[in-house]
View 1 (cartoon, rainbow, N blue to C red):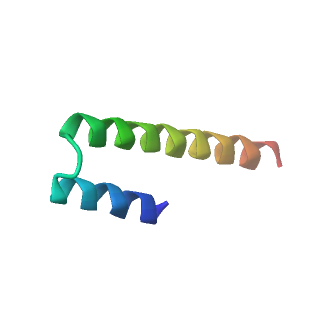
View 2: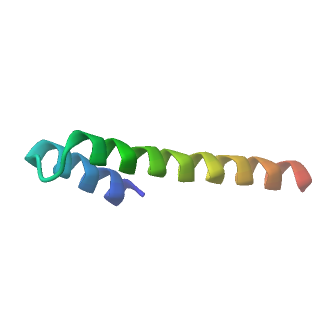
Length: 47
């Protein structure tokens, strides 16, 4: 996951893509992380 974050930062710093595209990718990553947290929490409560 940290590799994806680093790649997004690199894109933003090098202006390879516009800010809206980077923000959309970060929002998608945040959504995936939230899903992971919720899944882990549910798994830990069911044990």
